[in-house]
Length: 505
Ligand code: GLN
Image (tube, rainbow, N blue to C red; front, side, top):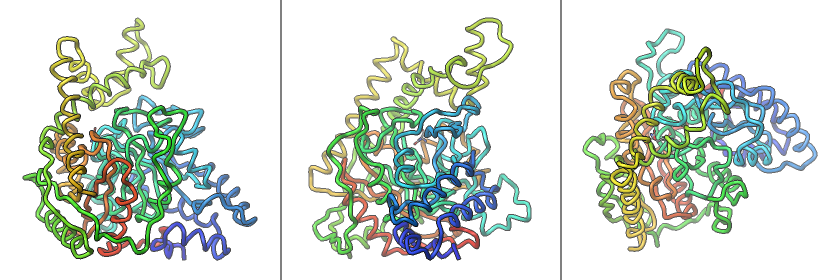
């Protein structure tokens, strides 16, 4: 009965709730059941059943009295475990914050709650969002739901043969793809919402930097972090963006007046749009199947009336190096707060305060986090600062200017791959370390974070092996309206298959 909803938008489901065809508590129950039945995905770190049940009780009252707060009223939503949730532990998938229970909600979480969403749990991720596979978590790797359906889960599949969900917001993407919730919050610093969305066959939006509040999002790289939205389709993504966007007095980097809620237009015309194909995104390692969908969708956009032209973003090749220097420098500074005193894990039996700091940090963080702290501090040493940090900042400006020049020539959107191929197997993924993996996985996604512009990952079709393949659209800052309208056109045309599961929502 509820699995019917897999093919429905949030607005359609909401209509049925208002009409009393179905009760929101049934959804909440089904969601918790689904999470329980798909534990093998390891996509949730904490399931907040009590909170969700209380929220849904209240929602049901409001729905019955005709005063639903939004179409999200009474619907299950998940939250990545790097957003603070009042009274619900927030671990960042790290031993350091294993027992951290915030006393407040991140602004975007509060907005979801104020609009009636029921928060069913906190999703798995790479520790402190440092990664691209959702495998470097203190709670173990997240598994991709697509292949898990094909392989019989009751016969023990070797964990090494799992397909990864992508990261770092892999838990959120797997939660949405597995039918456990209608949408989930991710975060995107270098691609962490778009990559797992592409690998899991769902929509992943990285909004313009400053459009959504970062208050309560535990920082990775303050100058690039944005809350991301993972949903089943572009319409739901837009609905949630409209709820979350806007100025926040608690985040001075949010903008005040540049966002008007977006209505997707039924008859949106592409005839006055120019779509650029960035030449430099033809990475030598990109899989032929990705190249095929890339050119197919470019032709589709042409058929729909858009002008499609090749464009150049000449500094793309420096983006990985530039990103990693800036990332590590901001990480070094952000992680300084975890000292064993104010927050999180404290090592026992140390002889001095200094030893306690060191032991807490060595045992509380994984190797990836420790490595980034060390290299970040190295880049920031007074003798290295000019040659590394300052150079990287200059490169960042050049990379941003590449985009500005393309927009200035009349290009409205860019179309590119999200990932270089389909989701890899866990055993293959682990052959390369976190740093090497990020260099590969984030190749097409990081530049948008350096420039701050919005980008969306849209599922296009299944690979020969039955795994989702996605593409990315990018737009000028605050160009979400065109971005989402064109994304929806593509979505309608490609008709990506829905993963039908017996007990999903
Ligand atoms: N893979 C990138 C990193 O580890 C991006 C992570 C993210 O977007 N949170 O830094």
